[in-house]
Structure formats: C-alpha cells, structure tokens
Length: 135
Image (tube, rainbow, N blue to C red; front, side, top):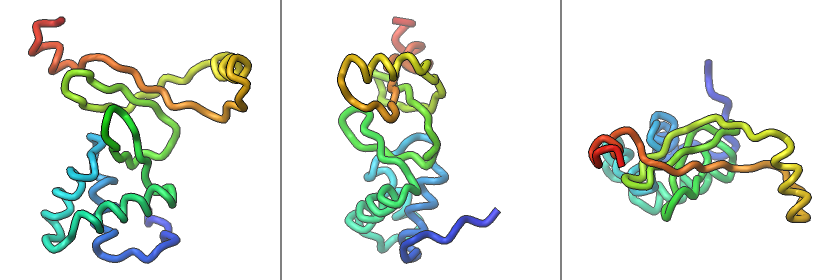
C-alpha cells in the first residue's frame, strides 16, 4: 500500500531518516538514527538528521519518546505504552490499557481535563535478568 504524500518536501535525506525510523524496532536515539542513515547517505550531517526528526514528529509521522534521560523515536504512532529495562535501557512496545476509571480519578484528583496518558513500566529485560542471576 503506498504511503500518503507528506505535507513537507521529501528530500532523499529526509526519506532516509524516515525509512530508518520506520524500520527500527528498538526505539533508537537521534545519534543511533544518524549512524544508520550515514551508512546509507554518507554525506548527511547530524544537524540534518536532527532537524528531520523534529519535522517528522511535528507532522505526526513518528513519535518522540522521553523514556529515561534521552529522547528516543518510534514509528508506531498509534496509542501504545512502553516497558524500559532499568539495567540496559532497552525499550519495548506494550499495550496495557487502563480502565476509564483511572483517567477519571486522575482528572478528579488533579483538577485537570485528562485527554490521554502515556504509561511506562520499568523492570529488567530477560537478558539482564539472566546475566544478573535472576535478581
């Protein structure tokens, strides 16, 4: 199925950044995306990658996630949540919908109009659990 025409000029550099993010399953950082794009487009600069990521986020083509201390990017723009390993930092998509009563209570307790939520669960991935003896 062909992708819709984006509302911005799709240069070869922008297309390469978009493709790298869409192909990624590991929620890469801007630096990781830059290194992957550079392998395809050797002349690309980090500033171009960073500006393109901002443009893609602005237009809803990708998500910028603040999970931990660095921004990561996700091509899955549908509502979903994340689990992050506190040992190695790996991030995985999960779908753990909260009951409506949770957002209603949050609205009541905070006085905010709650329009949605982002859930981040923390723990240890299988690799880190195994390497630390199950602790």
